[in-house]
Length: 116
Length: 114
Image 1 (spheres, each protein chain N blue to C red):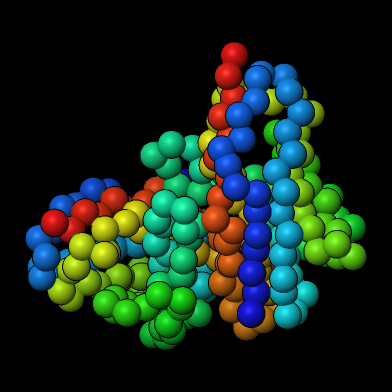
Image 2: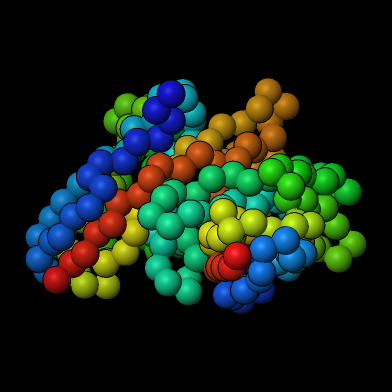
């Protein structure tokens, strides 16, 4: 049971380079999220999606774009990487129960990105 | 907006000591509350949850009770082990909104020595 899978696990970028982080979930969850984790800051929401073809901004969206072309995949793009984007990135997914209660989120293992 | 405040760490304990990590929250709606654990180099795993007032979540010897009157969800364990060393995050989610984004505290590192 794979759950939430993130690729790659590690990456080093030069300032100005672009890249895409891939998140895939096999639990048929409607909701997917990208968070970044920085020391002393907890986890901060970058973007999220409430269904295939929809995306929305979170707390810290600047410098990132996302796409959800397929229900199981949620892509996070950095068009022009900056050192301030050095972080650990986590993807997560969740769903609502039949009586519309939001469930907990299931997390991937993270992508450690360094921008030099 | 929603927010979560948890005690700063690190919390340093000896094996078999009693653990409390405080967590308080502010929410505009009716939140569900969670504790997540993150072991070194890994993602976050759900430790326990509570979805309504007075519910007690429990797992692996950890417990937390949803206290609406004090807006708190403190994590406790009667006897910690070295293997409990990790970072613990308190989080909330609006229970009935059309989507479910988690709001996290900043995390509390627990270090348990033999």
